[in-house]
Length: 203
Length: 203
DNA sequence: ATTATATCGATAAAAAAGTATCGATAGGAG
DNA sequence: CTCCTATCGATACTTTTTTATCGATATAAT
Image (cartoon, rainbow over all chains, first blue to last red; front, side, top):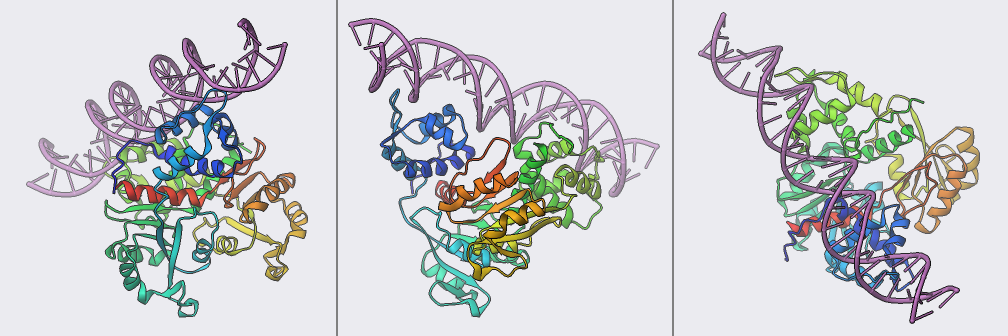
């Protein structure tokens, strides 16, 4: 695994998928930083800088960048080439929503979901928690999404880590604690909404 | 409406709800910045700085801060006192997951959901899109969550804006465009996942 | 051919965010 | 009572991120 220890900022990293979406939806062969910036409400300078950190392809004055070059450079940078198998733990509404979400990149594959409720299990994609250990290890899964109730989240998180999961996306409203070698993102929908409401009041 | 034009950073704003969660879950009367920082993997200095910008209550050396003071100050800052009525547009799995999400602050109330599918309508909380205009205006709603398919998202967004919606939380995988006086948050689950996967590869 | 303009990359400046330092103090230990 | 330690607030410093400036260049218009 190539170790990209280069110093890309988290902020830039978050913008890359947005660029990708715009690049993929345009029908033109080239695109200017100005155009991208307009779409996303950013500054053109920022866009150029971001692109420069992940792509060696140079833009032409008055023209812009080759769309296909940028797409492949960003995808390579984000490692969106090798297909990724992911599991969802907790097949409630949110879990199932994520299983059926159409916005993920092509190569992201939610392979299994797990739940304690046997009635939800279809033995195609949704399995009982009993089979979690077996299926994670057999299929060499390293990424998991947690959508279980908050009281069970930390336990489930610990279990996943012990099974070799390396990255966790947590939607339960608690801050999960993991060893330092595990990547975690606590999604915190409540925080997002609070921020939105706050902005509303400022305006 | 009091116009809080003070210069709180977006980063701080995002941390406030996290502090709130910890403060609400502790059983102690006081808490130190060190303790909060540990829980969230932040530095104590940063926590103190954040708290200082939204609260006038001073901490005592060796003791820390009064928990109840911090809670009320943060809640006031985030305007989490007045109850907020919100609608969800698109009662698919994600929409319904949000309707049933238990992690939101108490005073956030998802009042109605709307969908084009009449079979989903229960006339209690889920209504047909036909009644969107009427119910939004009658109930003086200003915040909406969009969970419709991406191709319909911009149209729906425009419609909501024309109905007086001032803040929109968009889960459709497109960057919605709104007038500058409207607050929007494009949630972009795909971007979040891409970032998580990237981090995984860096480690 | 000349000029105007959109765009680029590089570098510099500014702004924002995070971190370190330090003197002060409250409470507990000896 | 005296000393030690955890913690505080204030200030200064460092790093990161964003924005501005500027000369260069590719295309289009005159």
